[in-house]
Image (cartoon, rainbow, N blue to C red; front, top):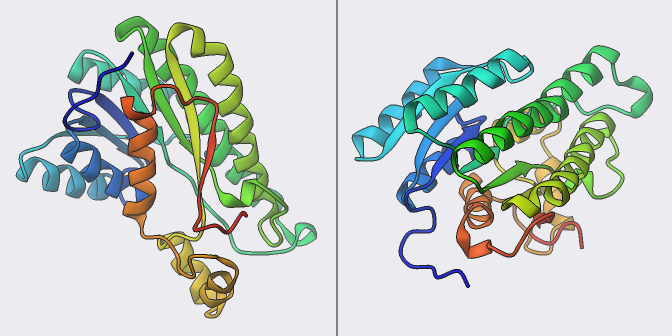
Amino acid sequence: MTTIAGQMLANKVVMITGAGRGIGAEAARLFVQQGASVMLVARTESELRKVRDEIVTSGGDAAYFTADLSDSRNVEQAVKATVERYGRLDAAFNNAGIGVTVSSLVDEREEDFDLIQSVNYKAVWMCMKAQIKVMMETSGSGSIVNTSSVGSLKGNPGLGAYGASKRAVNSLTQTAAVEYGPVGIRVNAIAPGTTMTDMIQQWVSINPDIIEQIRAKTPLRRPAEPIEIANAAAWLLSDYSSFVTGVVLPADGGLSV
């Protein structure tokens, strides 16, 4: 039986993608507060450096690696850099993702479809491949959380390709949970609802009423703050959820109910 005391992520080495801002940056700060050492991964070095410096200044342990996660070589290099820095990989939060302009299915551009699948779906697949291999080699067990979306749980008008990419993440998550549960690696996903990130702010600039429209459909009657999604991810990565795997956890204020 697992015995738990103290910080949720004490002594764990965690790789976080999309760590330069939004949910990923909040997760980095939270995970360190909960005892983890973190490797921050994203495309924009200035954002990563800012988060890393903030954590280090406050006494935490963080490093960063700049990578294009749609490039398999970059993904492998990021995982390798984590092991070179910390000696192992215990957990990973695959949070990087992009959205595009809201449009109907017939109006979506092929180049947008390809980009979304490359970053939101294929990149998660590549990260999991590299992370699971290293977890088995260095820690012998581990935990992975992938960021999905409430839009993956049902039809997603105006965001068809985005929702499809996230539903693919759900499938990858559950398949990996079945395949690697026997070796002690848990794999879960979190499906955020409306969360006040840059992506949402972009949608607001196009449709100023979108927040109110979604708020009216959400039982909690408000959007989430990024830290609230990070809290759920921390729990799924931690030993507090030691018998939870293959789950796509809605963190959506009840929007999917």
